Structures are given as C-alpha cells and as structure tokens.
Image (cartoon, rainbow, N blue to C red; front, side, top):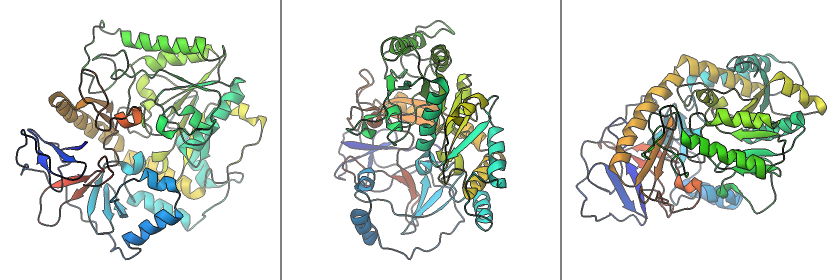
Length: 498
C-alpha cells in the first residue's frame, strides 16, 4: 500500500525523508518505509519551495518526556484515544502560533488541518488571546440564568450575521450538543418525530446524533438515534448521476454531462430518491431534514446546485423544518458566503454550529426563529456551561477577527487557487479521481482508476476512507537547518509517520 504526498507549485508542500518521485511531482513511500523502485521514477526534485519565515519563537519544552506521555496515554487515557491517534510515531505538539505548530523537539509545522477544522483564525491569535485573558481576569463562570454583558453582547452580534427570521440563539458546548438540541426543538415544534439525513453524513457522536450520522466508522452496535432515516446523498462524483456542470465549485467532475444549459438531470434524479424516501420510509408528516451545505467528514461532498432548494420545499410540505449543520462550513470557510447555506440560495429554519465558532474553545450554538424558539417553552432546558463568559468573549473576538483579518476573502482566494492547482494533478494522475469544494473546504478523492471510481489508497468501503478533506490529519514541517525543502508528516497504512 502506498501513501501519496503531492508537491504544489505554490507555497505549500514538498516531502521530507527518503523518497522517490514519479514523473511530475507525486512521491510515494511503501508501508514499511522502503524506497519504491518504479521504472518511471526520477531523482528527487531540487526546486522545492521553502516555507515562509516565522519570527515567533516558541517556549523551550521542558515537561514530560515522549515516553512518559505515551505511557500515560496507554494506561490512563481511554482506549479510543489510541484508536483514533493510531500513529506509531505521533507528533508531540507543544505550542502554536497562527498557522504554525511546534513539537516538543522544536520542529515547526504548517497546520493544514486547523485542529480538525476548528482553529478558524489561527492558533493563539493575539486578538483572541487578549480577549480571553481580559475576561479571565473579570469573570470565569456564571450561568445563563443570570444576566451578564458578554452573553448578551455575543448573542446580539452572532444573530446579526443571519437573515431574518433567524434571530434566536441558544449556546452549547459542542456541535453534538447543538444538533441534539436541534433535534429536540424540531420534534417539539412540529409535533412529529422522524428526521431525515444524508448517507455519509456526520452530525455528532452522542447517542441521539449517532442516529443522524450515517457513516459506518462512527456507528456502534447499539440502538441509537431512533426515528432517523437516511436518504441517498446527491454525490455527483460517486453517485449514479452527475456531470461536469452540477456543483457550485471552481472545479467540476470529469464526468460528461449531457444536460441542457440551466437544466440538471442529476438533480432531478436525486430529488426523486428523496421523494422515494418520503413516500416509503417515513410517516406522512416528519419533524426535520438535517443537511450539511457541504458534507464534511463524508468527504467534502457537494450536491447539485439546486438540490437543497428542492429538498427544503419537499420537507416543508410534509410539516418538517430544515436544519443546516454549519459546524464545518460556517464562519466564512467556503469563501463566497459567510454561511454555507447561503451558497444554495436557501434560508433554513434552524442552523447549528461549533468548531470554528470559538477558535478551539469548547462552544456550539443553535440559531433559530422566534416561532420555533417559542415551542421550546413547553419544558425547562438548562445548560451549565452554555454561554460561559470566557467562551462568549472568545467567540465574539473570533467574529471581529474574521472581519478585520479578511479571513473570508482569504478563504475564497487561496481556496480557489488551491482547487484549480489540485485539479491539474487530477487531470494528470489516474490515482486522483476528484477534486471538489469551495473556499478552504476542499476534498481530494483517491481512486484505483477513474473508470470504475473504485476505492483508492485505503481500499475501504465507507465514504470515510474513500474521501479526504484537504489535508487529512497532515502537518507540514520544516527540514533541519540548512535544508531547503518542506514536507509532510503523514501516517501510512500501517500507522507509521514518514
């Protein structure tokens, strides 16, 4: 099994360590670390770009040894931690500053994964750090049953980013909590129970949201999330229908499209599948439809341009409300819009968010309409830490920083460049089946061949293994002093970093 790392013409990546390059710039390592011996291999390129300089100096690391940390990880951390972080040689992160990370040995990395799509304005951004420090000196904690300025200032500010009637905010601690709450509110408001989501979706890991999640890697052999039904994901690359004009992206699929201009037959077919689900798999009245504007964990999957507009209409005809999960697409990541749903020309009835909302500080939110919020008054809901003063101060600073730093425009400009450059690799190499996305939410799909679109490097059968958000669990690090290239630390199929 091979692991691929691509070298771009822009200021991105090369590779560290023993390697060989095929004609062009793709480089391969076999799983055991041996150098590959293909006849097409040339000598390593010598024109690898250097990473930008960095004046920031991290604090010297003097704490636990690597061996002691791993011993504690094995003995005292939940086994799932070891299952998720399966590296034989893990990266031991010590400090972060903006786009940079340093490990305990002082090596510098360019973080292309943003702390699992969470660090929206950079590690320890000075403006956000200052806001956190100021609030920590004033008030660490009180609950939202009391009136304090940071909570109300933030709720008003967050609501201002949404169109009417989305103006009521509930704060939580995570995306799973936000989606849990959205499920409850939808059922209370509609008086219905069944909820529809896409296959390949990920909406959280709590017992309730695991029902919304349709991704095998996150499923346990226990009953969970009752009342949730999955419908076909309108994936124009891997699905049965799709062509070269379907999605809202700088890069389209390589599938030929025979549709007339402005008329997407693929969209009609996928809407037909949703209609089939509504007729055969759920009651005549439903509670809600959950959908990410672009699937995140599912592989940055984009739908036909008008799909959500048609889907929302069908759901509302059956008494349901429409919920946009913006945990990964929100806060300007798609570049063209602040919220992913805006790119579909729809207004949902409820929006959930987390991850980038507070730049890594635990926080989530549900934004909905006054009418739906009123239905929630049938009982009492209380969240001890939802709306924590420090969380609100940080999240408020994040909103300001995104605007002041022009982060949304940067996502558009850099993301569009990256997508178009990656598409050149897709056109050149058989192993790259698809490049897709908007802004800096980008997916690159590896395949064995482009005709069958069979599973790529991982050989798995689930969407989780077939797709990769760019760049998956990958960090870029500098060479040792005196060397010019930059490269990636990626785990191979046996879990070892190269």
